[in-house]
Length: 350
Image 1 (cartoon, helix red, strand yellow):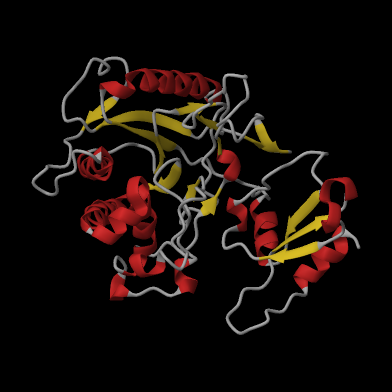
Image 2 (cartoon, rainbow, N blue to C red):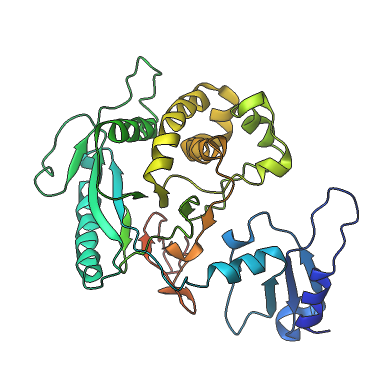
C-alpha cells in the first residue's frame, strides 16, 4: 500500500528459480488519476546496470515512484561520499575527428574546452589538463594552428576495405597516439567534436583502476542474442551470462581511463575492431556501433570488471531538457547528436 512496503518487498525478494536475479529496482504507483487500474501496484524488477538507467518520465504529473535497493544502492551511497583528502588527478582530453566535415564542430568543441579550462584553472583542485585533436585523415589541415592536433594515418585499406565505415580509423589512430606521444597527465578523457563542455569537468574515475563512462542503453553484451557473438571475441571462445553482465554498456566516448589502461587496451581494441568488422554476424548485428562493442569487450578482456557509469556526465537533447539530472547532479557535457524535428503543425517529433 505504500512505497516503503514496495521497497521492503524488493529487499526481501527471493528468486523463484535457481540462477534467477534478485530484485534491485522497485516501482510503485501512488496517484490513481495517473495510474488508473495500476494504482498502488508494486512492480519488482532487476536491471543489470541500474546506475545506467533513469526513469522514462519525471515530474509531479508522473504517478510512479521508483528506487534502487541492495548492494547497488549501498555502492552508490559509498561512491557519493568524497574522500577527506582527494588528490588532484589531471586528465588529458583527446578528441577524435575525421577531417573537414566536422571542422565547425571541432572549433565549437575547442572553444568550450578553452572556456571551461580557464574557469577550472581558478581552482587549485582543477583536474582538466591539456587537449589534443586526434585527426585520423592522415593529412594536416587548416585547423593545425588553431587546435592542438596529432595527425594519424587512417587504417590501410589493405588491412580491410572499410571506406563505408570510417569509424575503424579511430582505434588505429589511438594506437598511433599511444605509441608515439607522451603527455604529462596520467589520465585521459576521450571525447568527440559534437560534445559541448557545460562546466569545468572533474576526473570522474572514483578509483584509479576503474574507468568511468557515460552509459549507452543500446550497448547490450548480456542479451541472449549477443552472448554467442561476444563469445567469439573473448579468451576460450565462450562467455557466461554472469560474466557478460560485467561488460559495461559503453563506448569509447565520453570515457575516462588511466594511461596504463590505454596502453593495455588500445592495441587489443584495434585488433578486435577489425575482427568484428570482418565477422559477418557481428558486423550485421552491431552495425554502426560495432566499434563501441569492440571497445567495451576489450576492457573486459584486459581484466576490467567494473566501470563507473555516470549518467549525469552528459545530456542528450531532446531527451534531456534541463541543465541537471537531479539535485547535486548537473550535466557536464551536451551531446547534440539527435535531430530536433518538427511537423508542419509545429509539433516536436524527435
